[in-house]
Amino acid sequence: MQSVSSAPSTRPLRLNLANLSTPIAFIITILIFWAFSPGHRFLDPRNLGAMAKLTPDLGVVALGIGMLMICGEFDLSIASVFPLCSYVFTQLLMAGVDPFLAFIVVLPVGAALGLLNGVLVVRTGLPSFIITLSTMLFWRGVLYVASGLMPLSILPYVPTGSAFAELLTGQVGPVPAQILWFIGFAAVLGVILHFGRFGNWVYAVGSNQDAARAMGINVAWVKITCYMIVGLLCAFASVMQAARLGSFAATQGIGSELKAIAAVVVGGTSLRGGVGSMLGIALGVFIIQAIDNGLILLQVPVFGVNTFIGIAVILFVILNNLTNRQFAGQ
Amino acid sequence: MSASLSESPELLKMVGIHKYFGRVHALRGVDFSVKRGEVVGLCGDNGAGKSTLIKVASGYHCADAGQIFFEGREVKMNSPRDARALGIETVYQEQALCPHLSIARNIFLGREPTNSLGLIDRQTMNTDSMQALANLGLHLRSPDALVSALSGGQRQGVAIARAIHFQAKLVILDEPTIALSVKEVREVLDFVRHLRDKGVAAIFITHTLHHVFSVADRIVVIAHGTTLVDMPTRDTTVDDLSDIIARGTLGD
Image (cartoon, rainbow over all chains, first blue to last red; front, top):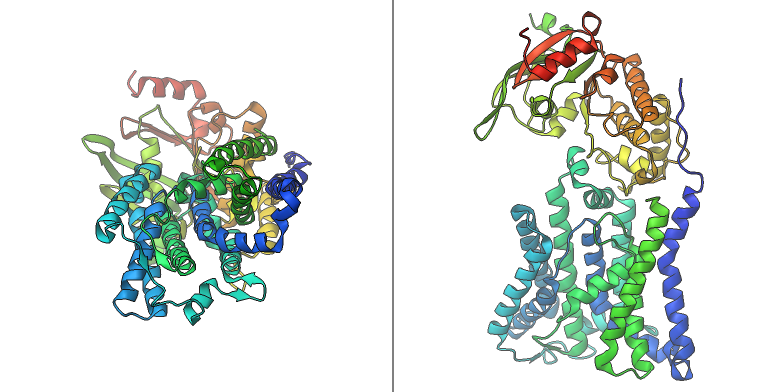
């Protein structure tokens, strides 16, 4: 009986290193801004508190985008689905619907918008980049016409300190509710992705969808489900943001589509699918937010911040590619 | 009557299979069979129809006409899932495995064992994976290694181990030795012998007659969508067959 030589013996060690690259990048980012921000204000409790309220608006959506990208697809339409859900929520409130009920109605609306994206991508076979660019433009137009670009206050329906506002934007001790929701979503999606059967299918579809299909996995269903998760998270985050701002604004979500991709990619997710982790994605969200916030503390002009985020994304992706290439033995 | 049917020596029997793709008549009434525990070599030039025939046998395509019998009973297969439920596993050449997934996750893809919480039972998955590979004579260090780190021969081993772990009665190997080094080819041919030793039937599709001659009990040649040759390996030679395949006809 012939036995075949085993895989390279350094394999497990290499794997661990690859998984550590994002946490290390995260810690270095934090240390840099801590060291250089005036009076080390970056890690000041008040600054941390502000970041913990702001980060989850985009972060919750980015978690879903990350899962979708692991299965090999994109979603640019979040930039419009996000404010559209917020608009629907606001309209329901203005029609006299209880905020809790309106919230429960908006979640499936978001999921349905995700379903539409997913079905279009699966049925047409066109690149998801093109499909979701189109749905982004479509819903943006619908939203502008419907809302007339007028901001709408929701404070009369969801006053500060009301039970609903507290649920989404309150505090648990010193910790803002938003960051707890973010961590909660990351934990649930992380369990699904890394320990559940569905997660295994998500990786398989992103890695080699023909193989996944040959093994009896319903590739279309996996993709559509990922799109619906993104839509659902969009709906959740948009209501959370509206509750924090006290209003709906038609400009909510602009630019979020690319920032979400930036966060996910910085977190070690491959643009080609099959590679990524929920911890990495969550840390990627924090890294992007830390750069955003840290640069402002360093008194970089607000309008120039994107320049640095652009540079940072390239650097992080190069770093990830270097580690991945080394570890995948290619 | 029905008793004699289920005793049929034929594991898989395909009768008068036709398949059209638009105007292309890819299969023109092909008869094909595999006995229990038999290794059948399936040969033919590019475009001869062997891939189409195999895709019909593995549930990927539906035949437009003809009958398929498995273990003596007529069956209808509308998806690879149906074929797998019968015990027909297909190992496709390029699309067999997911490179970014671990060995264990590939072996159990789509059939992941779960614990009481509905989460993947990694312990069972890892132990069973290593056992399935060892049964094939393949000893890999860790079930957590990514498939992208394996050699071509090892990948075929993982794909075949997956098939027999799930009690396949018939394993279809689609060009398993293509693009492999000489040493890797020898490994894969060993895997096929292991299969036969375990009483699992196999269809071995290849362009390379030398490979199939060393393991197949019977050779079938397809040309222009029909069966050209169907004879025991010992009754023919590599030279005779390569001549027939090149000409695409039996005529002298």
